[in-house]
Amino acid sequence: MADTAEPLAGAGARALRKPLPESWFAWLLISPALVFIGFIVAWPLVETIRLSFTNATLGGEEYVGVANYAKLFADPKFYDTVGRTFYWMALAVSLKLIVGLIGASLLNAAIPGKALFRVLVMPPWVIPVAIGVIGWKWMYNGYFGLISGLLQEFGLVEDRVALLATKTSAFYSAVVTDVWVGTPMVTLFFLAAMQGVSRDLYEAAWVDGAGRWYRFRRITIPQIMPVIVSMALLSAIWTFNSFEIIWILTEGGPRGATTTLIIDTYKVAISSQRFGEGAARAVVIVVLLAVFSLAYLFLLNRVNRHYGAK
Amino acid sequence: MMMDRLSLLQKIGLYIATFFFLLFILMPFIEMFRVSLRPMSHLMTADFTWWSDDFSWQAYRDMWTTVPLLGRYILNSIFISTAVTAITMVVVIPSAYAYARLDFPYRALSLGGFLAVNMFTGAVLLIPLYRVLRSLGMLNTYWAMIIPGVAFLIPTGIWLLRSYLEKIPKELEEAAFVDGASRMYTLRRVVVPLAVPGLIVVATSVFIGAYAQQFLFAITFNNVRELQPLPAGLFEFIGYQDTTWNEMMAAALTGVLPVMLFFLVLQKYLVAGLTAGAVKE
Image (cartoon, rainbow over all chains, first blue to last red):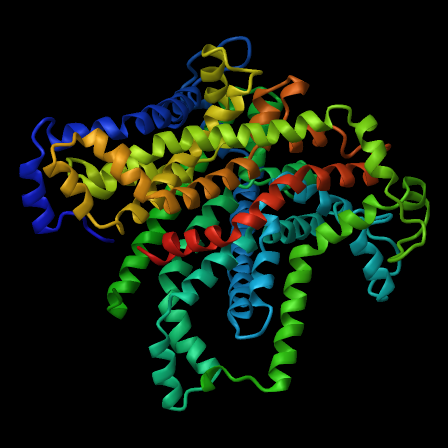
């Protein structure tokens, strides 16, 4: 990260600015952002933690200690949901990274038309998520959906398949749609990073007789690694919290097959209005994500130090 | 450049691979368009067919009667995203400047705090958020969809704009100081005009975020039909036995068309902005 406090600007410029101490001015500038985050994120977070120790419903609330957590941790279904959520996240994120890497390499290739191809990747990213998902919901349809139709045409299935109606196919269908929603952004970030890699590196390797695949593995990948790493963490968090896609496709069904933690939380807290129990689930999500992010950053740090990367 | 030379076979391979990649990305749109052109009766009764000779634009006429508020939904979507973008930018510009240029206690810690907001989504905080909005009297108003949207887009906005501002040379600001301009004046009259390209990039990415994520807050905090954005408005018609899918697809495509065209114009800035945000760090 670039540090702004270079000696020259730090000492020289500060002497010129008299009226308001720099730190006061800085906090003044940040205060609107702080107010927003305070009201809409920080306070609700504290309130969620408090509610998780109550039996709050629409009617009223009473302190119940850890009862909500006890109930949650005693429920075998909860562990299924946690496992499913991590599986959902791992699968969708790795697919997004792989497809994004392939896509970015294709868009980065020196072929005519690449400017147009780059534009064509954007639509899923710039339209409301829910609109794209409505399109997928239709395609998964068993009677007249495109996918079932194609599978029949190619003789892969005998009969019509309603992909969202059986547990396994519903889960993997939701994964495919999530990958579809997330891929354009990952692709464009990777592409941007690839275009930032110095050509000298490639030329030097080429002069030494390195082939394309070798240059990709030994130059492209290491050079864009920082972007891959940060996209992986961001995608992981977003996928973990992904709500609209599953909600529109299946509402967590059939029989809980696509119920991730966030869907479970929404169902309990908003659909059944059991605020206390919902809040306990929300707290679990926050803790799991915080632990996951810290572990990820910690491991990353270790790996970086081990390989002596910048 | 010799290094980039591809054999004919390699070129064909690349085009085929690109075709399949883009097919995956664009398939839902192609399919939505195809469905929007077919009469409902044919869609439901016939087996799946790729092509048919009964294509018509009828659904694009009927949708306005089936979804009477469609025009409202489309405008609401654009209005909400525009309002979110405007407010976010007003909040983000001073903060990003502070993080890019000023030195103050808890600088790194508070920036980290802002970025940690990315770990939450509205869905986790819905219950207390609902109460906050209720006590502010904002439920069932546009504000219920605008204010939470702003809060969740501020951190990324600060991050992106900060890295842009850091690239602007400091000399001009310092010259203004020497001439006796106040800090606020310098920010407004020197920094902001210099940062216009960066501001466009950040505003565009904020707009995308606001436009893409309107669904959850709308279905949770707003019951007033007239105020719903497009995705929430259409969702009401989806998933029933008698859903007129061809009209829904027509409505969805028509609804996103204005914004798609807008992005087509701005796409150069978009990718440039990503480069700035992504490649740094």
